[in-house]
Image (cartoon, rainbow, N blue to C red; front, side):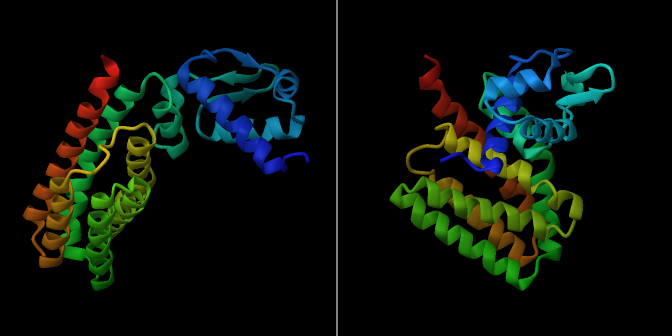
Length: 237
């Protein structure tokens, strides 16, 4: 049975995206629609759709009489969650994680401080519930369920900042959290101290204490960075 067109499109999109961000398809290289269709065993319409999406991310450029060209890194939309995912899948994972960690340090503590003055009662409940779920699943070593609760916590916190531009970075933060689990950079049982810090953020936000919320969030990000280094070191030896 032939795969649906959407599945073919996704396969081609991910293959080409990873090739570009890894450097396997070098900047300035011209890609031919017909050649790509033959190589991937799909129709030209599937290739064109993948090219359209990649061009919207700044990974490709299309010009009349030139065709489809791999774009320079400076043109990439580095905030696109798929671009982040592909970079985390490649050899530049450590550099991407470091860059994302720096971004988180500049955004999430500010979001926590703002949330302490703008959070809704409903959002307070979600934050507290997410921490409880993290605690339960962390003790059980269920990293997938822990991740879902962690994603909910950070998404809700960014939204609770009341700043639409900060909230729009949810996809970026989510890819960091997903990437840590996907690439084995999480300990088998999440650090209880890290979960307590999430509880501290939730409590500070609920209590309307911006300074405490910001401080606890900075500690969360610092702990996450240390944990990723610790988990990565044995693999590097």
